[in-house]
Image (cartoon, rainbow, N blue to C red; front, side, top):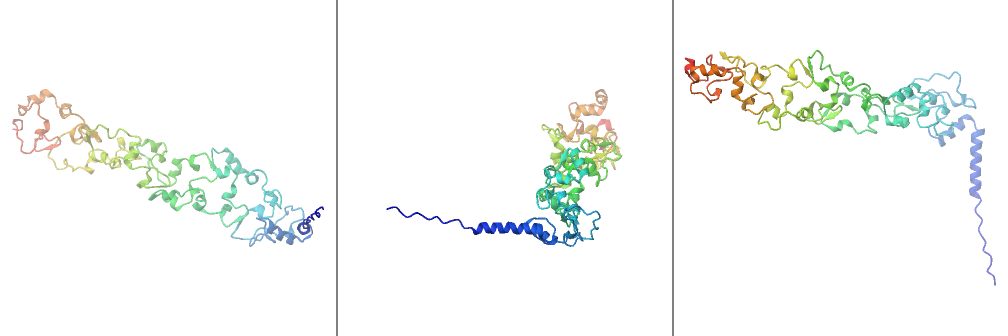
Length: 395
């Protein structure tokens, strides 16, 4: 006996009927509705479409005044005062100026082409520039600008550094010492938002950028530190924030040593204390000065900043004592007291051996160090004898 045939349930018809009904409604709404009704439905299904009557509080032309072909009116009414900045194509309902159609969110052309279609000057400058901001190069204008309206100038989605910090890490978080211009200002005070010919998207060269706020550190100076003269401020300083005072990238000692790696010498036996401490700027001006070697003052005035002025009240002075660098090395030496040479050779540069031997007071002094009896700087008599020392030469 054959089994009874299986009856298949037919697919329900109501989904098809509902779909057809929905399409009919859409067609009716798109073709037969009043303009304001059509506009209302477009705002439901598509982002960015102005509500009926235009964007709120802008005094835009009502949609009813646009003709059926969506042509731009010949004499559009001026916009009323508003806190919102309105993109002109959006204000005049010219959707197809940027979009493929008034019913599509798709943009005309490749990313960025719709914007450059109107902003020709920006496009020309962008193409001619060497350094380009990646979002602009990728056509992602909307990462910074709202294409329709914004409460901010230039249709920016945010203002000031807040906009930059949506992509960039906060540069002020890098250290205790913050560049005042960065902390109080706008990133675009120094940087170009789209493109430029300078690294770091600077509007100008590093030297010109710094000079906008900082007085010319080299003006009327005879001697200029090479990095400063070449405008390489960022060789030593960081532009945003630092853990070190003066916005230095490294402590003074390491900053100077990055170029002057021979001070002090590795095999130096005696090192001048400021040099050993890395306090190079105690004696040198890091930018420019009127003194050789970029020292702040000439000797001996510079030396008196730390050493007692033993020449001030002395009756008898060694005639070379005011030329400190004639006998001493300023940074390091292989001799005690930072002498430039062995003391016998140093004294011999001025005092002939035959003249020294002719002096009665030098009898039996062969091989003795000159400073055993003489003070190299000042003394109680013309022979610069030390206190309590008497020799036949002094009588």
